[in-house]
Length: 83
Image (tube, rainbow, N blue to C red):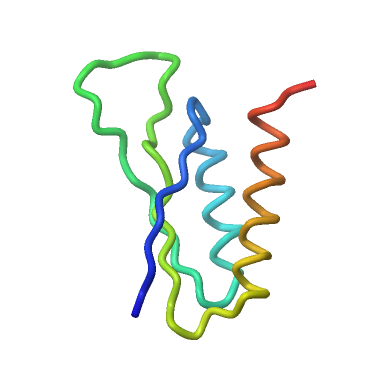
């Protein structure tokens, strides 16, 4: 059975979401899709992307899930908590 979850980073640009998705796709047992922004109102400060959809295949290991969490933590620290 496949498990899905949504990951959001408010306000990140499209290029960074693509970078995160490319990084996550290197982890075995993980599939990543970009979720387009669904807002009808244009806001320059909003991202073009609403979030990432992560799908876990049945053969994904705990180690792979931990690796995904490490990758997400890296990007969260880098872009969401600026020094």
